[in-house]
Length: 101
Length: 538
Image 1 (tube, rainbow over the protein chains, first blue to last red):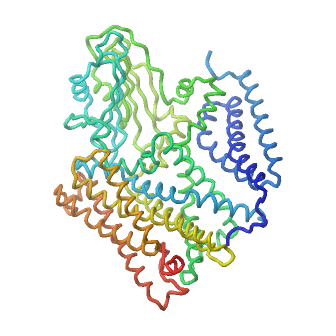
Image 2: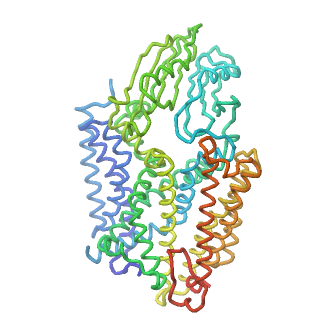
Image 3: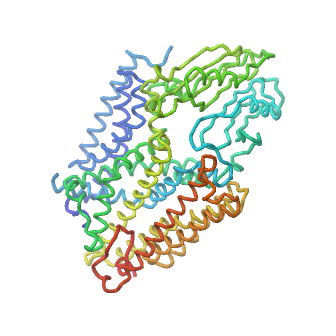
């Protein structure tokens, strides 16, 4: 009953790309998503939500990475998302500084 | 779901599952016993407390007096907490902040203090089998941080495995739930048991996977926050999450009249009815800038998240307050729930017993998964070399996992007979014994044998646990069914019940050696291993 191999990724490079996209890329997207939310919403609530939801979202993104047809495009998408969230974080920090000065 | 997604998810579930399986089994098995960590500790030390958690109940003033005898307290930060339902409280002291203090006051200290005898014990002396099992369930015996991170990653990939598992099973979730074909071929039995029990245990397992990852890998979530949101200011993050408070500075002004700590605790207790005092922080002891923060919780049947805090200055005046009824936020809720639902300690023995059973069921799901993995690859299309490797791997896995049962039982007897135990005794006895048993079963190369004799061994040893307890401490289980010694009664009963069940399973297994049924049938319960797997393996 092992999974039918014809549906699995055969190229080792593509496989590495999927694993890294899921593990590293997924982590980056999950973390940057929560950080971006934190600066625009109540940051304490978002940070404490992130302590559990960060892992759940990361796991889901990891699964999605393996389902992708083209791992390189998926890496691109995860990088793009991270960049967008990072920008949101960057501007959010300017408008809503968190650290009391 | 299309075929492609199904097969990919299936493969992910298989691979992530087989990689974490043996480690996850250890985590769940020892973790299940950790629900009774405090009972095991008290049973071993023969020091019993009230079974219901009431926080710090003993008076603080005699404790402070006994500390004063051994330590110069001026200018120190002192923390007293009761984390476990044991007679000992933990005391942690910082070095005195007074730069003119004597040399011996310039070192910090951490120890356990018995609230009845006022004897102090360091961590190694206070070690118990309960603590050992609890620590083994996050691999703390492997040097920090590797053990912690490994168990955290196992937990995270467990989350990955249960999500992919439920997705693979999604279309058949209802129909297969009612399917159990014990007389079908072996692979079907395991598959049925794996899926049905997996679905029943899913909410439980999901909770443990997420909270487990949170406990062991929270640095992965905290670090980016500190880096990007707080520009490297770690203390600020913890302040905002109310996990610590910045200690006040020393004023270098000794005061003559230090307020009675017990008085402050009593004041807090009186303010909110029935409050359980969990923690006490004393900053700058006996200084004019002294601050005392008393923390407590409402009983769980009163309010699930009811964190209370009252701070006093050196004169005993209230300077800060957190009301458990009105001032508990989402933040307090999350922090409380992440711990409570993992520890299962908010609804008495009933919930912990259910959690224990679900934990052992999870062990079964893990092991049946490994056996499915093996059986599914026992076919002509798989090369003989690969099949030999698979069998060897499963042989090792099964030996390591199942020998946990007899060695755990034997350790209960060892610590009881040995009396005064410390950390190295428990570590050596358990880990070396486990190694020897595993090596023996690996050498026997027979999963059926391993399963059968681990159950028998565990069961026989288990029956002796209450006997040894009775002989050594005089607390025979028919004498201890009362409030005072209930913890002793509970541990004895736990082993009697476990022994009866495993002995019953042992005899069930024996009957299946009946050669007539050998080939295609097995009857009865979802038992881990049968004669047919013996055939496969030999």
